[in-house]
Amino acid sequence: MRYFLTCLIALTALVAQAGPPQLLLDVARFRNLNKVEKGAEVEIYVTVPTQPLTYRQRAPRSFQSSAVVTLDILKADGKSAYHEVITLKPPVLNDTTIAIKNPQSFLKRIMLPDGKYTLRGTVKDQYKSANGETIVEKPLVLEAPATGPFLSDVVLLARPAVRGASPDNFGRGGYRLTRTPGGSYGRGTENLFFYTELHNAPAGKALRVHYHLTTLDGSAADADGELTPQAGRPTTVVGQLPFGPLPDGPFTLFVEVYGGPGNTKLIAGHRAIGQHNVADYAPAGAPAAR
Image 1 (cartoon, rainbow, N blue to C red):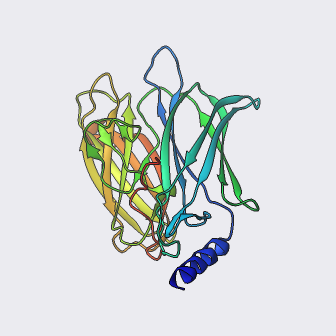
Image 2: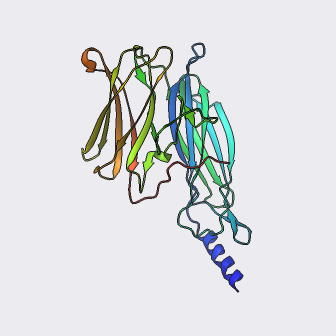
Image 3: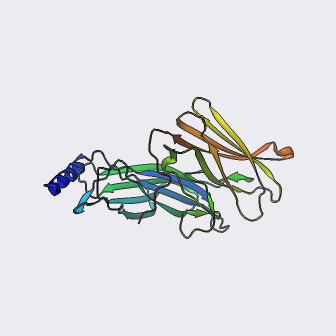
């Protein structure tokens, strides 16, 4: 009787799965350091929340979901510049009614020439026939910056950047980076962390870096730092800012580099947009897909 009730609860959980699968695409563009082949390194951080996925029973008290992610990068003329299909198998659960199921994520690093593209991601719930597919598209523009210093895209992190070599795509600039899916910071997060790279700055002279965090109602937090660019390679910029009393909701992080006399002239800047909501659960970096 107990086994029957367990199966009935599991079946109810499977039937209760509603809505299509979800897909988050976070894109960061870094300049290709190859002087011969102009273009960019595009990092695509893909996150599939497993909460909406259908879980199929594999054995008594053993349930698992499965999703197939297709990544396409299309040129302006519609021709394919990149195509890959990845199957995700989240960990096996013994109870599908648990409130929190960790998302699955992976990161792809792709070299592309400068130009205009469309990034298309498709996720399909393998155990759901109706309403089991979602397509997300984003424009992707790669262009060489004007001469002079410039910053790459700012990457929002769930944890501090950790110095040291990394054997996988999660390493960059001598750090291991734990990205936050969708730029979202949820319950229990007191700080946001970030990473970017400064190019073409004059080597050997200390520069001032200013960080400005602002929300829709005008609330703000600021901090300053210092860095000394080195010749022949990008200069990594890592940091953190506390959310403190800032209200929930969308926020914008500005990273600005100042040089010239007294380090008062703005020579490079970039921004990132995220979301802070303490009422929601947001994992501190989804585990890498297996």
